[in-house]
Image (cartoon, rainbow over all chains, first blue to last red; front, side, top):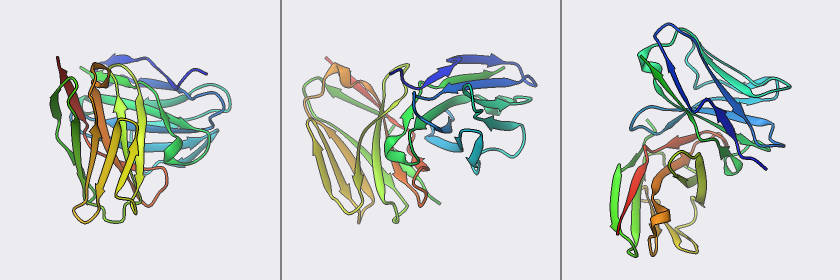
Length: 114
Length: 111
């Protein structure tokens, strides 16, 4: 059983471009969580999704950021019109059910905005 | 506000014990966690402790919780080169899926 997959692992964008980060959960997992880690800081919760539903997006910036987890395919975190402050590591986790004890993390996508 | 603090680096000699410390501020925490992140990999849950416990041992790992001082530690006995990683401390909030994270402690093993 492959672990949580994230791609790309590294993404470079110029200011104003769009960034699309993909997360494929572990097989059998229907819950996906996105976190952001700024340099020398802890992870910050962004959004929690189940298939086709956003359950909690309280950690998402109100503008430019959106997330989806369609019926088929990976979960996508989209950042429109990126700015330098969006440079961070973005981690995805999945779980078979709701709960922290069972979250499995992907390797992260490191976004650099020039 | 809620905050979790860790030292950014710890250097130990191979074979010695490593003790990674963490302090937190939310006295209503229910669970406290230690995660390990190896280079290029995701975060791996190492262990967790319920807030009504003061110690948990799992092979080479010992977790100590001082709830009065809001202090959590992870002791790794007989530290090996494979233990080189970043160790994150995290506490649970009222939600059962959101965690408050420390910035991580990078464990460096000296031969």
